[in-house]
Structures are given as structure tokens and as C-alpha cells.
Image (cartoon, rainbow, N blue to C red; front, top):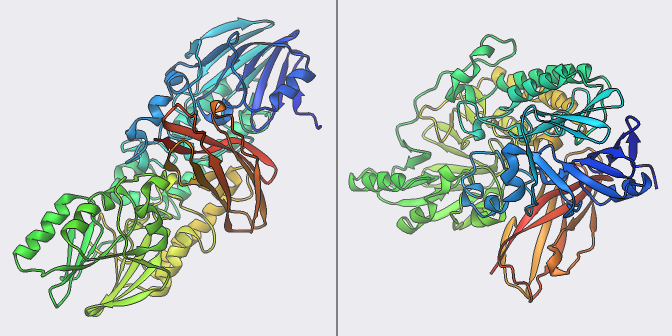
Length: 607
């Protein structure tokens, strides 16, 4: 068996499992930092450690806390501001505000499956002595709001266990944990925690550590250089984001410091929409010469009242078709009421339909529990006639991967309804949870190539009154910027493609949540997107509650390049199961021989 640990000084070691665990040793007893995973036991045996006396956690994520037993005689210390996410995490899983209408992201990712006992809470400046070492606590938010760094002075050196502030020189483990609102909700806060991250890294740098030891990553013996390169790359990556961001239209005050930067696309003027269109909330409505109406999206009962007013005023006769652009709550919340009021045909793209038909199957930003009936599912290029208009449907993975586009041709206009995917200032990719993929034929590259091909006279956003379009030069500017992003973001992560660090849902459970009765067998599929240019292997195992006395063997699959793969599990629920309600089922995951720990989860609701 290869060595799983390295020695930093006489008394200090690091176990290298799916995360790095600090081991401060004093004879046969130890203090551990971020212990997680079953392989740690092998290192403790090799070091002849028989007693773990204390455990410290840098932050509350499941991948650095799960899989290592916290014994009754071991003191557990955690960040004070995150104590509830350790000792009362059931309040997260059982609160609907953390399940539906997700506009705030902190906390949101890798929450513990079950609470653990907390003995000590730590805040800025706290000091403690253990064995041959003195320890000091730094509050270093960024990766999470409550993250800590532990400075260990031992054997004449100072070591910083810095959580997931940094992975390696110039690199982060992932980017989606930095989603945080500044003057808006977290939903609009792409890289919004970057200022906190920078300040935390500077605080760690000022402590003059000999080495940085991240939870994910490699031991850095030149902290100054590692931090400098990361801060430079982050600034470059964020500039490439702002350059073509649609958010500049909505919140220009957020980007005043970037005005005049080279390579930033100018903001276009709008144009009036054709007179046969109406706009209410996030709904666009087309009125035919026959008086019939074609409606797109319904996020509020207010829209239903507006349509009824049009009928009362004889502006329209009836609604005959209904199109859904994407699954976000402000576009679908009132669809059940709309469908009851206007019994017309509901149409949408196959990728969108999968979410809105069964929203409990997904955990995504802005998701609504409203269930939509879909009468016709479309695929790329499907076309039909609605009165004098020709409709052509597309999968349009812009603002979110689960998104559709509709080309409407008639009255001398080529109108493209792109949901929330564009504004006059560029692309709406300000939420990493929306799966804004980078690369050829995916994400916005795919969308812009389609716009380039279709050459619409008008583009419509569901939140914007004026229509707009883009010049050929502006489309090329956006495409060039996306290509530059793909390179600079790939350099930011320890993966062979940027999408692994940016796509929170490259591994996902389907259904995410399901109701099941004890004695039945649950069917669960783990879906994996291979963002690499070569085949990749994946291994997964559901971690079931110990009381069930059921173990599911690991399962494997090989996924072709740039494709999706899946692993299916049949999970028997014991008849004797007494704990009803919401049960979190973590999935232990290994990708291309890289163990990632309890990387994703599903929810079983036992009834």
C-alpha cells in the first residue's frame, strides 16, 4: 500500500486521503484537523497513534467531516459561527427555505448528513496549547462564511491549516462555493466572495506561515507566491466575466470600477417590440390576427389577471398555446393556476420538461415546487405553425442548462425568445449553480452560434421591456471572451477542464428527492457529466444509515468524453425502519481514481 502521509516536522504530519488531515502528534496521542474518510485509520496505525484526544474542523462541509468516528472521549472543536451546521444540521434539511426558491447559497453545498456533537467553538484570535504546540485561530471567510484557519506553532515553525481558501499555487478546489451576493441576493453574486477570500488570504500571509496546508490540495512551502498567483488569476477571471455580463444592465452600480476596461463589450440600445406583443412580469404574449394568444411563462397570478383583462377588453379571444422557457420559480410558480384557467396546450423543450414535470427530482437555484403538465415535448429544430406564425424550438443552455429558446417568424420579423439568457450588455451567467458550461457546442457558445446562424431581428428577455439584437462583431466579442474564459478558468482549477470547478452539478442524483415506504426498494441514479476530452471512470456508493444494517456495494461506469453517464442503484428500505421523515443519503464518489468522499447526496422521505 502506498504511503498516505507526509511529515512536516517532528511532531506534525499530514494524512493524504480524499482530503488532507493534519495530525499533531505527541507520543501515541494526537490532535486531528479535518479528519475524514476511512483511510485515515491506516495512517494512525502506521504512526502508532492509539489515542485521538481532540478534533478541529476548519469548516462545515461534509467532505472534510464525514467518515471518521467522533468518539465520546474526543473533544470536537468547530468554527463558532458554524456551530449549528455541525450540531443541529437537521434544521437545514427540514426547513423548506433551504429546499425551494433558492436565491441564497450560504450555506448550500455539502452539508453534513447527520449532526455531530460539538464540545468547543472557536473565534478569531483564540489560542490553545496542545502537547508540544501552540495553536491560534484566524477567522478566514471565503469558501464558507464561517471558515477558520488554524496556525500551529511547533518545532520552531508555523503551519497554516487553511481549509479550502486555496488548493495550490494559483488554484482553487472549486468556484461555486464563492457564489455570494454583495448588494443583491447570492443568486446574482458570481465570485461574490472573492473580496472576503482575498482578505482572508492576506490575513494568512501576514501570519508568515512556513507552509500552507489546504483541506483539498497540496502543501505549499512558498505561501506568498501561491497566494499572489491565485489573486492575480482570480482578478483576471473576474474581469473576463464582467466583460460580457448581462448583470451590467440590471445592476450597473456593481461594476463602476470596470468602466472603460479594454475588451469589455459596450452596452447596446434597445428597440421597441412589435405591436402584437404584450409583456407582463416575466411573461411575453403574442396576439394573432385571429385574436388568439400564445403565452410564454407564468410566474405570478398577476399575469393570469392581465390576460383575463385582455379578454374582457376584447384584445384577445382565447389562449391556445403556452410555452415554458425555463424552470425558475419566477417563470413557473403560477403555471398550475394558469393551466386550470386556460386549458391550452403546454409545450417546452425536453430538458426543461424533465425539471418542471418533477421538480422534487432536482435541487437547483430558484427551483419551484410547482408541478407543470407538459403536453408536447420538443427537441432541437422542431417546428410548427401557430396561426400566421412559424415557431421553431431549441434547447438553449444559456442562463441555465435547463433552458429553451423559441424562434417566432411572422409579420416580417424573426423574433427569438431566449428566456433570461441575454440582456443588451451580454450573457446572464451570474449564478454558477445554473450550469453555465464553457467549451465548444455547450453553454453560451452553443447559444451564440445559434443566434449567429438564425440572425433574429429581435431578441427578447423575459425581464426586459425593450427588444434588442447583437451585431456580428458583438457576437464574435462574446465568443472570443468565452474562449479566453475557458483557458483562464481551467488554469484556476486542478482539473483538466474548467467545468469541473464551475459546474456544481457535474455529479448529481436523480431523483434528488423521493418518497418511499419502509419495505419498498428505492431506485436512485447518479448522473455524471464527463467534461474531459478522454473517457473517465466513476465509482459510487450510497452511504446508508447504520441502523438500517444495509450496505450497497460500490458500482462503476466508464463515461465517453464530453458526455453524460450514469450509475443505477436499487436500495432496499428495511421494513423495521422506525425513523420516518427526511433521510439524507450521501454518495461516496471516486472519479478517474481521484476519491472525492461524500461528494453528493439524495433525500429519501420515508412515509
